[in-house]
Image 1: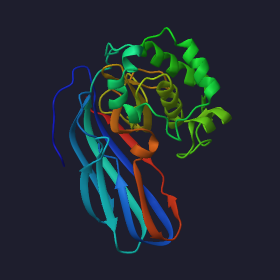
Image 2: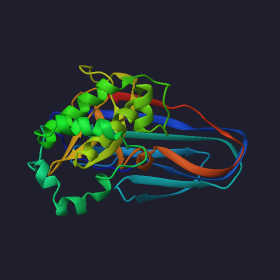
Image 3: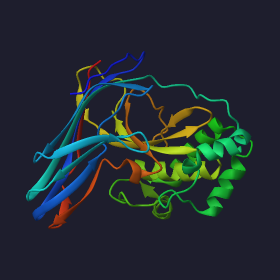
Image 4: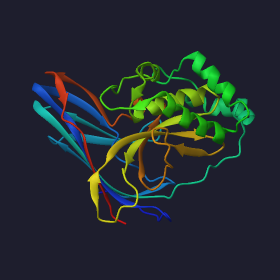
Length: 289
Protein backbone atom coordinates (compact mmCIF):
# COMPACT_ATOMS: atom_id res chain seq x y z
CA UNK A 1 0.00 0.00 0.00
CA UNK A 2 1.26 3.48 -0.90
CA UNK A 3 2.14 5.59 2.16
CA UNK A 4 2.28 9.36 2.54
CA UNK A 5 1.18 11.73 5.29
CA UNK A 6 1.01 15.28 6.55
CA UNK A 7 -1.42 16.44 9.26
CA UNK A 8 -4.52 18.57 8.67
CA UNK A 9 -5.83 20.57 11.63
CA UNK A 10 -9.54 20.21 12.23
CA UNK A 11 -9.98 17.36 9.79
CA UNK A 12 -11.06 13.74 10.07
CA UNK A 13 -9.29 10.48 9.39
CA UNK A 14 -11.51 8.28 7.24
CA UNK A 15 -11.18 4.67 6.09
CA UNK A 16 -13.05 3.96 2.85
CA UNK A 17 -13.83 0.67 1.12
CA UNK A 18 -15.44 1.09 -2.31
CA UNK A 19 -16.57 -2.04 -4.17
CA UNK A 20 -17.87 -2.05 -7.74
CA UNK A 21 -17.65 -4.02 -10.98
CA UNK A 22 -19.63 -5.90 -13.60
CA UNK A 23 -21.18 -9.29 -14.19
CA UNK A 24 -21.64 -10.67 -17.71
CA UNK A 25 -24.35 -12.73 -19.38
CA UNK A 26 -21.76 -15.29 -20.39
CA UNK A 27 -18.08 -14.48 -20.69
CA UNK A 28 -16.12 -11.36 -21.49
CA UNK A 29 -12.81 -11.38 -23.30
CA UNK A 30 -10.07 -8.81 -23.90
CA UNK A 31 -11.33 -6.42 -21.24
CA UNK A 32 -9.41 -3.13 -20.90
CA UNK A 33 -10.39 -0.84 -18.02
CA UNK A 34 -9.47 2.43 -16.32
CA UNK A 35 -10.18 2.97 -12.64
CA UNK A 36 -10.23 6.45 -11.10
CA UNK A 37 -10.83 5.17 -7.60
CA UNK A 38 -7.56 6.07 -5.90
CA UNK A 39 -7.39 9.39 -4.03
CA UNK A 40 -4.23 11.48 -4.12
CA UNK A 41 -2.66 13.73 -1.49
CA UNK A 42 -3.74 17.35 -1.99
CA UNK A 43 -3.56 20.54 0.06
CA UNK A 44 -6.95 19.57 1.51
CA UNK A 45 -6.24 15.90 2.23
CA UNK A 46 -3.41 13.45 2.93
CA UNK A 47 -3.56 9.85 1.76
CA UNK A 48 -2.14 7.60 4.47
CA UNK A 49 -2.69 4.33 2.61
CA UNK A 50 -4.41 3.24 -0.58
CA UNK A 51 -4.79 -0.01 -2.49
CA UNK A 52 -6.77 -1.15 -5.53
CA UNK A 53 -7.66 -4.84 -5.86
CA UNK A 54 -8.97 -6.43 -9.05
CA UNK A 55 -10.57 -9.87 -9.38
CA UNK A 56 -9.73 -11.75 -11.56
CA UNK A 57 -6.10 -10.71 -11.20
CA UNK A 58 -5.00 -8.48 -14.05
CA UNK A 59 -1.84 -6.84 -15.29
CA UNK A 60 -1.88 -3.14 -14.53
CA UNK A 61 -0.15 0.18 -14.93
CA UNK A 62 -0.61 3.43 -13.03
CA UNK A 63 -0.36 6.92 -14.46
CA UNK A 64 -1.53 10.48 -13.91
CA UNK A 65 -4.00 11.74 -16.48
CA UNK A 66 -4.33 15.20 -18.04
CA UNK A 67 -6.38 16.47 -15.06
CA UNK A 68 -3.94 15.16 -12.46
CA UNK A 69 -6.05 12.15 -11.49
CA UNK A 70 -4.39 8.90 -10.50
CA UNK A 71 -5.50 6.21 -12.95
CA UNK A 72 -5.00 2.45 -12.64
CA UNK A 73 -5.31 0.81 -16.07
CA UNK A 74 -5.70 -2.97 -16.21
CA UNK A 75 -6.37 -5.57 -18.85
CA UNK A 76 -7.91 -9.03 -18.64
CA UNK A 77 -7.05 -11.32 -21.55
CA UNK A 78 -8.59 -14.53 -20.16
CA UNK A 79 -12.36 -15.18 -20.41
CA UNK A 80 -14.18 -14.07 -17.25
CA UNK A 81 -17.80 -13.92 -16.11
CA UNK A 82 -17.43 -11.03 -13.69
CA UNK A 83 -15.13 -8.19 -12.76
CA UNK A 84 -14.78 -7.02 -9.17
CA UNK A 85 -12.84 -3.90 -8.23
CA UNK A 86 -12.19 -2.86 -4.63
CA UNK A 87 -10.55 0.39 -3.63
CA UNK A 88 -9.46 0.72 0.00
CA UNK A 89 -7.98 3.94 1.35
CA UNK A 90 -7.26 5.79 4.56
CA UNK A 91 -7.37 9.56 4.14
CA UNK A 92 -6.92 12.46 6.50
CA UNK A 93 -9.09 15.39 5.44
CA UNK A 94 -9.00 19.10 6.24
CA UNK A 95 -11.49 21.40 7.90
CA UNK A 96 -13.69 23.53 5.65
CA UNK A 97 -11.89 26.58 4.25
CA UNK A 98 -13.18 30.12 3.93
CA UNK A 99 -13.50 31.43 0.35
CA UNK A 100 -10.06 32.17 -1.08
CA UNK A 101 -8.86 34.27 -4.00
CA UNK A 102 -9.28 37.96 -4.71
CA UNK A 103 -9.85 38.01 -8.47
CA UNK A 104 -12.99 39.84 -9.50
CA UNK A 105 -15.28 39.05 -12.42
CA UNK A 106 -13.42 41.51 -14.64
CA UNK A 107 -10.11 39.86 -13.72
CA UNK A 108 -11.50 36.46 -14.68
CA UNK A 109 -12.48 37.76 -18.11
CA UNK A 110 -8.91 38.79 -18.89
CA UNK A 111 -7.04 37.10 -21.68
CA UNK A 112 -4.48 35.58 -19.31
CA UNK A 113 -7.13 33.77 -17.26
CA UNK A 114 -9.14 32.80 -20.34
CA UNK A 115 -6.07 31.23 -21.96
CA UNK A 116 -5.10 29.36 -18.80
CA UNK A 117 -8.61 28.15 -17.95
CA UNK A 118 -10.07 27.78 -21.43
CA UNK A 119 -11.18 24.16 -21.02
CA UNK A 120 -12.87 24.95 -17.71
CA UNK A 121 -14.74 27.94 -19.11
CA UNK A 122 -16.28 26.21 -22.13
CA UNK A 123 -19.46 24.14 -21.76
CA UNK A 124 -19.40 20.44 -22.49
CA UNK A 125 -22.39 18.47 -23.82
CA UNK A 126 -23.12 17.37 -20.25
CA UNK A 127 -22.97 20.89 -18.77
CA UNK A 128 -24.77 23.02 -21.37
CA UNK A 129 -27.70 25.00 -19.98
CA UNK A 130 -30.55 26.85 -21.74
CA UNK A 131 -29.75 30.40 -22.83
CA UNK A 132 -32.78 31.91 -21.10
CA UNK A 133 -31.76 30.44 -17.75
CA UNK A 134 -28.18 31.60 -18.16
CA UNK A 135 -29.33 35.12 -19.05
CA UNK A 136 -31.56 35.26 -15.97
CA UNK A 137 -28.74 34.07 -13.69
CA UNK A 138 -26.30 36.52 -15.31
CA UNK A 139 -28.69 39.38 -14.60
CA UNK A 140 -29.20 38.31 -10.98
CA UNK A 141 -25.46 38.01 -10.33
CA UNK A 142 -24.21 41.00 -12.33
CA UNK A 143 -23.08 42.91 -9.22
CA UNK A 144 -21.70 39.87 -7.37
CA UNK A 145 -18.06 38.86 -6.96
CA UNK A 146 -17.09 35.25 -7.90
CA UNK A 147 -17.66 33.93 -4.35
CA UNK A 148 -21.10 35.48 -4.11
CA UNK A 149 -22.00 34.31 -7.61
CA UNK A 150 -20.91 30.75 -6.81
CA UNK A 151 -23.03 30.72 -3.64
CA UNK A 152 -25.98 32.03 -5.65
CA UNK A 153 -25.52 29.36 -8.33
CA UNK A 154 -25.34 26.64 -5.67
CA UNK A 155 -28.63 27.78 -4.15
CA UNK A 156 -30.26 28.23 -7.56
CA UNK A 157 -29.50 24.65 -8.60
CA UNK A 158 -31.38 23.39 -5.54
CA UNK A 159 -34.38 25.46 -6.58
CA UNK A 160 -34.31 24.04 -10.09
CA UNK A 161 -33.69 20.35 -9.32
CA UNK A 162 -35.17 18.14 -6.63
CA UNK A 163 -32.91 15.38 -5.31
CA UNK A 164 -34.26 12.01 -6.42
CA UNK A 165 -32.35 8.83 -7.20
CA UNK A 166 -33.23 6.50 -10.05
CA UNK A 167 -34.57 9.23 -12.35
CA UNK A 168 -31.35 10.14 -14.16
CA UNK A 169 -28.23 8.21 -15.15
CA UNK A 170 -24.53 8.79 -15.67
CA UNK A 171 -25.12 10.07 -19.21
CA UNK A 172 -27.87 12.54 -18.29
CA UNK A 173 -27.09 16.14 -19.24
CA UNK A 174 -27.79 19.24 -17.18
CA UNK A 175 -30.56 20.25 -19.59
CA UNK A 176 -32.21 16.84 -19.36
CA UNK A 177 -32.14 17.02 -15.56
CA UNK A 178 -33.72 20.47 -15.75
CA UNK A 179 -36.54 19.13 -17.92
CA UNK A 180 -37.49 16.40 -15.45
CA UNK A 181 -36.71 18.64 -12.46
CA UNK A 182 -35.02 15.82 -10.58
CA UNK A 183 -31.56 14.37 -10.28
CA UNK A 184 -28.65 13.33 -8.11
CA UNK A 185 -25.36 14.95 -7.14
CA UNK A 186 -23.90 14.52 -10.62
CA UNK A 187 -26.81 16.46 -12.12
CA UNK A 188 -26.61 19.27 -9.56
CA UNK A 189 -22.89 19.54 -10.27
CA UNK A 190 -23.29 19.59 -14.06
CA UNK A 191 -25.92 22.31 -13.79
CA UNK A 192 -23.73 24.35 -11.43
CA UNK A 193 -20.77 23.99 -13.78
CA UNK A 194 -22.80 25.15 -16.77
CA UNK A 195 -24.05 28.23 -14.95
CA UNK A 196 -20.67 29.21 -13.51
CA UNK A 197 -18.87 28.78 -16.81
CA UNK A 198 -21.60 30.78 -18.51
CA UNK A 199 -20.88 33.58 -16.04
CA UNK A 200 -17.19 33.50 -16.96
CA UNK A 201 -16.10 31.75 -13.75
CA UNK A 202 -13.81 28.73 -14.34
CA UNK A 203 -15.21 25.60 -12.71
CA UNK A 204 -14.34 21.90 -12.59
CA UNK A 205 -16.14 18.68 -11.70
CA UNK A 206 -15.02 16.82 -8.56
CA UNK A 207 -15.83 13.21 -7.74
CA UNK A 208 -15.15 11.47 -4.45
CA UNK A 209 -16.85 10.40 -1.27
CA UNK A 210 -19.05 12.00 1.36
CA UNK A 211 -19.43 10.74 4.90
CA UNK A 212 -23.19 11.25 5.20
CA UNK A 213 -23.52 12.44 8.82
CA UNK A 214 -21.92 15.01 11.07
CA UNK A 215 -21.23 14.62 14.78
CA UNK A 216 -20.32 10.93 14.69
CA UNK A 217 -17.96 9.27 17.13
CA UNK A 218 -14.64 7.83 15.91
CA UNK A 219 -14.88 4.14 15.13
CA UNK A 220 -18.35 4.29 13.61
CA UNK A 221 -18.77 2.69 10.18
CA UNK A 222 -21.62 3.76 7.95
CA UNK A 223 -22.80 3.34 4.39
CA UNK A 224 -21.04 6.18 2.61
CA UNK A 225 -21.73 7.78 -0.71
CA UNK A 226 -19.96 8.25 -4.00
CA UNK A 227 -20.46 11.95 -4.39
CA UNK A 228 -19.88 14.85 -6.80
CA UNK A 229 -19.38 18.55 -6.19
CA UNK A 230 -17.44 21.34 -7.90
CA UNK A 231 -14.51 23.71 -7.60
CA UNK A 232 -14.63 27.30 -8.88
CA UNK A 233 -11.67 29.61 -9.48
CA UNK A 234 -11.29 33.12 -8.08
CA UNK A 235 -7.51 33.35 -8.13
CA UNK A 236 -7.46 30.19 -6.00
CA UNK A 237 -9.66 27.10 -6.19
CA UNK A 238 -12.66 26.88 -3.88
CA UNK A 239 -14.96 23.91 -3.35
CA UNK A 240 -18.74 24.13 -3.15
CA UNK A 241 -21.37 21.38 -2.88
CA UNK A 242 -24.47 22.37 -4.88
CA UNK A 243 -26.40 19.22 -3.97
CA UNK A 244 -26.69 19.96 -0.25
CA UNK A 245 -25.27 23.43 0.17
CA UNK A 246 -23.10 22.05 2.97
CA UNK A 247 -19.53 23.23 3.40
CA UNK A 248 -16.95 21.07 1.69
CA UNK A 249 -14.72 19.97 4.54
CA UNK A 250 -13.73 16.99 6.66
CA UNK A 251 -16.54 14.72 5.42
CA UNK A 252 -15.50 15.09 1.75
CA UNK A 253 -12.73 13.03 0.11
CA UNK A 254 -11.53 14.02 -3.38
CA UNK A 255 -10.77 11.23 -5.86
CA UNK A 256 -10.86 12.78 -9.34
CA UNK A 257 -11.48 16.05 -11.19
CA UNK A 258 -12.21 17.13 -14.75
CA UNK A 259 -14.57 19.01 -17.06
CA UNK A 260 -17.54 16.77 -16.21
CA UNK A 261 -18.38 13.23 -15.13
CA UNK A 262 -16.80 11.68 -18.22
CA UNK A 263 -13.33 12.87 -17.12
CA UNK A 264 -13.75 11.49 -13.60
CA UNK A 265 -15.79 8.29 -14.06
CA UNK A 266 -14.77 5.80 -11.35
CA UNK A 267 -14.61 2.80 -13.69
CA UNK A 268 -14.86 2.60 -17.44
CA UNK A 269 -13.55 0.37 -20.17
CA UNK A 270 -14.15 -1.68 -23.29
CA UNK A 271 -14.46 -5.43 -23.75
CA UNK A 272 -15.52 -8.16 -26.16
CA UNK A 273 -18.19 -10.58 -25.09
CA UNK A 274 -21.66 -10.91 -23.62
CA UNK A 275 -23.71 -7.95 -22.33
CA UNK A 276 -22.71 -6.62 -18.92
CA UNK A 277 -24.66 -5.54 -15.86
CA UNK A 278 -23.33 -3.41 -13.03
CA UNK A 279 -22.70 -5.51 -9.93
CA UNK A 280 -23.73 -2.58 -7.80
CA UNK A 281 -21.70 -0.11 -5.81
CA UNK A 282 -21.06 -0.20 -2.09
CA UNK A 283 -19.10 2.36 -0.10
CA UNK A 284 -18.29 1.71 3.57
CA UNK A 285 -16.78 4.63 5.46
CA UNK A 286 -15.35 4.62 8.98
CA UNK A 287 -14.36 7.69 10.90
CA UNK A 288 -11.10 6.75 12.64
CA UNK A 289 -10.36 10.07 14.39
